[in-house]
Amino acid sequence: MTITEAQAIVDKWINENGVRYFNELTNMAILTEEVGEVARIISRQYGEQSFKKSDEGKHLGDELADVLFVLICLANQTGIDLTEALRKNLEKKTNRDSERHKQNEKLK
Image (cartoon, rainbow, N blue to C red; front, side, top):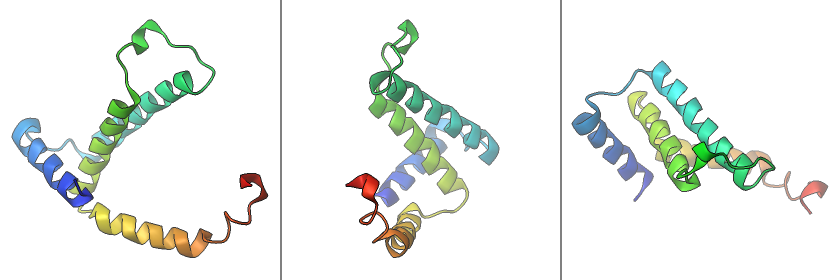
């Protein structure tokens, strides 16, 4: 699925199942919550924290998909074409960082 297709699928899902988009502030709060859930899993799976009983059944892929879903909701409701935004962002990063990382001794 392309990013454009994902934006259309999420929009269709919202209109058929979610009634309407939550407002932008609510979706920002939800996005923050979902990113926190990703951080929780990563800190336990790759970091030094141990898992708790309440972590059972939580999967990184599912939590990342939750983040992506809310991010797409925010893009849709604010009129952002994520394909174009990502293209422009990669162009910016390439122009700014194409040599910077290659010269970073910490990355060698």
